[in-house]
Amino acid sequence: MKSQIKRTFSNFFFEYETPRQVLVRNKRVAVVCRIIQMGVLAYIIGWVFMYEKGYQIVDIAISSIFTKMKGVSFTNISEKERIWDAADYVFPEQGDSSFVVMTNYIATVGQKQDKCPELPDGKNKCTSDAHCDEGKYKRMGNGHMTGRCINDTSTCEIYSWCPVEDDRKIPDPPVLLTAENYTLFIKNSITFRQFNVVRSNLVESVNQSYINTCLYHPKTDPLCPIFRLGDIVERSGFSFSEIARVGGAIGVLIDWDCNLDLSIRHCKPKYEFYGLYGTGKNEDKEEKPSLGYNFRYAKYYVENGVEKRTLMKVFGVRIDIIVHGRAGKFDIIPTLTAIGSGVGIFGVATVVCDMLLLYLVSKRDFYKNMKFKHTEIGEEKPALPQSKTERDLPKE
Image (cartoon, rainbow, N blue to C red; front, side):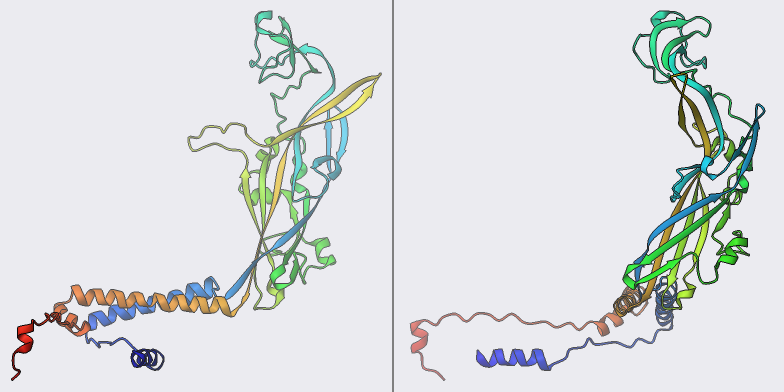
């Protein structure tokens, strides 16, 4: 028993086993094998290493955005002249990555809390007081009903901010159509913590004198951080005159794809523009519901001891700035992993060729005999115990 255990351990540590290989001279099978191997090799080199950079370890960026709008508009509505600057048309004004630039509006001046008839827009009709439940609020209404039906308008009387806003007619052309000439300055900073790399979109070639004169263009000035609002809208696929009238949403994508095996100077941003929500028609050429983008805000004041407000329904271009940052750098672990998976894929060629030789070629039986070695172990019959008579018999 001891010698058997010793022999087993000796065989395990000091013997090497390798599978037997059969060399088959078959041109068709050999060509198929080489084509598959070349395809696998092209996939590993071309896709895994060159395109996907499977030899690199990857980190995702942490980013911050600062924005600033500039531009001035002049309006003359009902012989009332006014200048609009960034403090008037940007919401919110903190310079965040998501903001709205006002391009059109409907103003309801001098509202105060009082009783007045609903807007005669066909949504709140009444023919008698029974249709106006006192103290209740209709979904499409603007205030609490008093229980009276006003015959002049055929609408319910409500307690609300009066007079009620009339937004049935949107100004066309837009009040601030010159907003297309506003400029947007974007300052973006990203950090790749794993590689201790910090970059800004104000790269080495972007200095103060360049910023003072440049305007973004994808071919001539692709690194300029100053964008014309009209160009942003047009490059996103919308018409500025249409989106300025009812509003919409634009996405500005700042894409960082950095190969840190090269010089850090090659880590530069690329800007892309997408129309997220705007105007137009659906596939059946019908006008889409709830077109554009708008919101309301109010300016409050006191006149003759009475609180009043000016209600503004603002239509504008909502801009959402999105940052996507990815950086890669050589690392031995993903490199070995990619090579190991590639070597494993090479086995596909062997499996395919074995299938051809075992089941499709004319000499498949001969190949089976060469590939597989069949052995049979005979069963040993157990010896029966001898009887006493058999034991007493003389042995020859």
